[in-house]
Length: 225
Image (tube, rainbow, N blue to C red):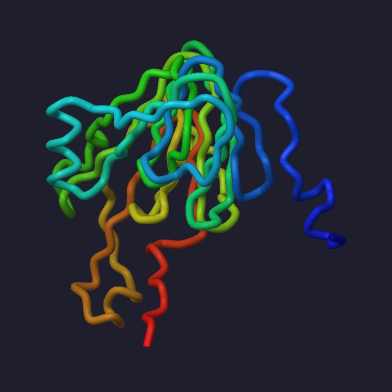
């Protein structure tokens, strides 16, 4: 059988070392040698001797997910083998988290991560319960983190002299040492849509980076007729 489909560009190759690598722009391969964590439902294929188990986040995590609809239902993957992860053909990225780093990420953008990383759901400081509250996933420790993003993300430097304002639906995450608060402004767009004319952004101040997706709302899938 001959086809460009079977070229090396698409062919899965044996892993040379344990851990996470980009299979292609839309998927991540993880060579499991022990344990790793991933969002439930994100695994698209695997080979080898692997076991899968839903991972509890404790009462606090369950409560926050129930209140907000956000959060991150996880599974643990254990054993020896390879697993592939993806989510709705979104773009995949790998972040190396080093000791002392703190990365805050929206739960919808987390795909998989090393078991050596610590993970916790926290309230976004300054956001309170506005709009149901803003809860993000905070990663610390040392290891690799796989992220997904609708479209090509934009990374904006934040400096003490120049804070950055981000649509709360568009923010993917931000680095440590950035202070957050809600900023209200008049929005012509919201007036046109019949709203109150007031828009709410997340204001980030300090020294670091904020990651933004090029979509302020989750695209609606076309209805089947």
